[in-house]
Image 1 (cartoon, helix red, strand yellow):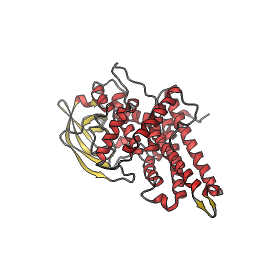
Image 2: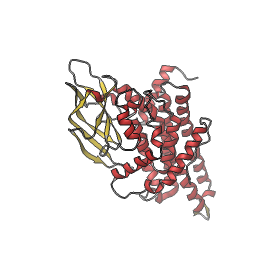
Image 3: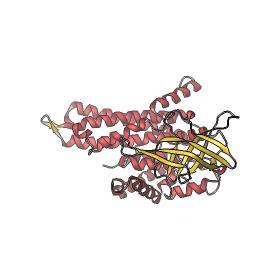
Image 4: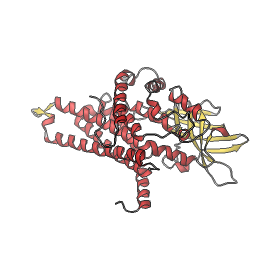
Length: 389
């Protein structure tokens, strides 16, 4: 069983070549991807280094040496993330977080761009996104972490939760609210090195997908003016632009997990006998397989249609990105749940592949904007554009 590029009209020859490249990388690194020995942080760092050595991080951290703002190819990002997720959702998440965590720099001409992006592209540093807070996880505009102006910079105070890579990252992309009482509150963006005095990891949070998240505390952390990205108040705009760019790839990862679940089911029902016949001969099983394939097809179309629209037509594509994540993650959830059902007791065991896929898929309907948030974005897009034609 191996992942393959879907046959859709959205791809060009370069995407077919990329698909083969990622397939080879997954085969060559299969042992690394499933090696649970050692610390989780050490394992993640090894995967990031291998992604860099294979040239895959160049697709989310493109070279900016000519000073121009690079143009991302969203179809490429989705292809890589889908293929990686089929083999290892951890690798797919690390691939995406490296890009999202520095997207405000990549999408600007900021002077810090090469200092951070070059090291991250080489796999020498790991990114983390410190945006979510306990009381404003989905409501990013309500962040409570403050940035108090000081001579030469700011003092950050607050607590960020649910932070992927938080306990071993080299730098954080942080959103903080201005604390200047003489002006209306504004949200600004910062790149903060993890070794900066005043930063501490309060705790690691075990998650159902076996990828622990962290609570990161900023206690009177001084950040120089040079570490602010964009102007004061530009933080939300920069963060949302990065999420829009990478959001379809969450759907792609979900489809990668769903395809793996379907592949596991085909092997299962073709080899297992029940009621005097093979499971695959039972009408109910065949119906379930057809429904799984239909959901995968719908999810793929939503993801790669959104990516193609962004790449070819261009412009800010918030509605299409939200549709891709909503449709693909919800469809993939149905597929993986059906796979668990077909596997029976084995499907809910801690040792089964489909059980792992279920645990990995469920958080995707929450992070990078829960399904309910995607529906709000879609509804706003409808109301702005009028009735669809």
